[in-house]
Image 1 (cartoon, rainbow, N blue to C red):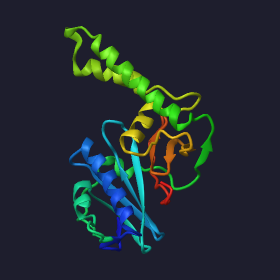
Image 2 (tube, helix red, strand yellow; image 1 turned 60 degrees about the vertical axis):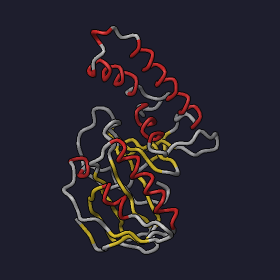
Image 3 (cartoon, one colour; image 1 turned 30 degrees about the vertical axis):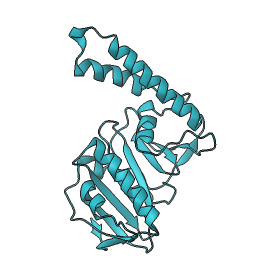
Length: 229
């Protein structure tokens, strides 16, 4: 673990506010969420989290006023409370916590290649709407003796594990991107699918969602810090 700074000074108040919104969404799914922060001497910090409902890694970057060297896991709630408000631009780093298992298995730093075949943002949102409608229809059709968490999880897994178009990206990754505020229903909104080794990554200007391909073996790595998420 590398920690060479005691506080983060953001490039402007908007960077801190956007990071705070991301942390708030993570905490909505897990009140005890932890996040891993990495900065490799550049002008941005990458914040990794894992919303349990989606089984993906979420990555949000924030531009910094000063370059720093940082690699630490902290409580998402403590970091949110430490973020500046009222026009301030610096946040004191919370005390480190023992990282959950996912924090040691991050996507690779380099080698990402863009892959064709990903539908546009409007089509992605339409696919999500159709999936939610299907889930509700199938859930409502269940007889009383089968209205169990296990049965509902089975329906959800069937729907959200489907891949999009001719890609390997499961629908749950897009669902996570929308739920975390990364996706916009705008035809001009840039979205991209990237691959590196056994990893898939859905990238938008507001953040990324990364996950292992189905059946991939384990591995360690670090995602490069980028102001483009």
